[in-house]
Length: 471
Length: 63
Image 1 (cartoon, rainbow over the protein chains, first blue to last red):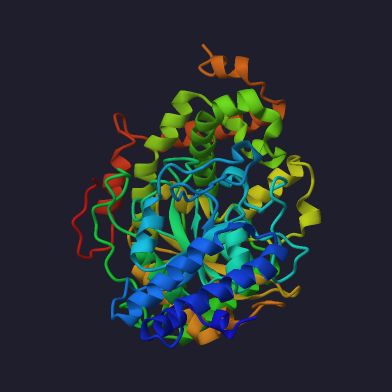
Image 2 (cartoon, one colour; image 1 turned 135 degrees about the vertical axis):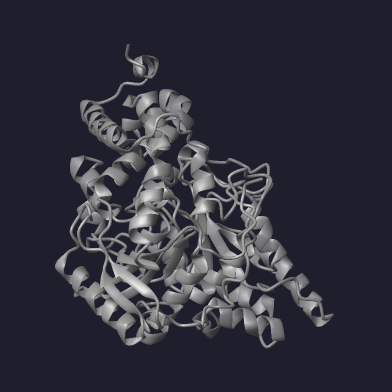
């Protein structure tokens, strides 16, 4: 496969800007990789080669005339099948919406267009983005590039697999309870869920409007910074967006972590990390110490109640959105989707409203207790090692729900509290599978988190490892 | 009165999902009893995010 796809997004963008690489060459390379390795990994929903190549040629002509569209001029990307582009299919990972044509273009897609990116098509996802393992019986289960017998994590399953396999340099995902961070962790790439309100959700499939976040996945923190800069900022079409300007996230990324207070969580986690994962976290903290950070154990409020409150909000809002479809087409849903959604139909309005009301006092408490003592909170993204597809192909029974809850036990609090959080690779387990470290910050501290992740990945080199069969 | 009665009549809910819902609701009640000030509105959450942000240049607010 093309050496162009070995470049990070930032490196490729730089070469596209100078003309050393043409947009057409980059687009052809990515399309070929998606058609090949991407489809082998069940990562691809559909590609738009004619439109993509036409846009690449237009961008090449513009560059020849001295005009650059933006910082992502000519960078080929493909995204989760939930970001609408007017007039194109957007099927949300479900047979129920087979043939659905988008009537609008998502704000984040329009912003990537404006920044000069090329949209190659859509990638597979968990049905309705409701699931953490990556299973989807409608589209086929995406495969983990590091070991195709194992899950990718979800719900940004195809996107994480496609980036890890080096078929595209970056992608957009959504994260309602870990759907960016868990697949990033399991596939060995970087993914950031920004602060609630940092990025518009307009034109993205809704799952839970109080908890939905949109963010990028890419191979490095710098790549994520470039993508996040392009999509962040106020949007009158999503009233939840903050008026806070996006600012530059890449500008301070090389500033290092000297003097930064990094607290690692031990007590308070709902699921204790497996021994190998705990050992990798200890090694990661040693790396931060060696880089000059002040590392200490940080007490945190108990995760279990935060996870329960998040599940109340998620399942009720999801049930409200899906009520008519579940009533009329229940048999058409993946059983795994229904297993996650159904408790929402049995919860009452008072408990839902209380779960929403409690966000503010619990956020205030969390920020005061945790970020009063540290700048960055560190904890494993996923406390369990990556299961196989077979281990989790249990018919959506209690075992499946238990594995799903364990996989998402250390991440959902950041959705409930709206805090920015990213996952960066912190090493590999004894089976050769990547393991992610989660970094969490105060509201709107994305630049700080990316800076810490960049320092860590530069020191360790984990993000430059290539899975077998990568482009 | 069961506030979920209408939904329950139209959409059958398995016992295990009802049990899960009851466990989640119990947690919400326990935390609310400890932490929830009277009169707080859910919308206050977004203002809290702005207020608790990094002390960086900020205009704050929402559209």
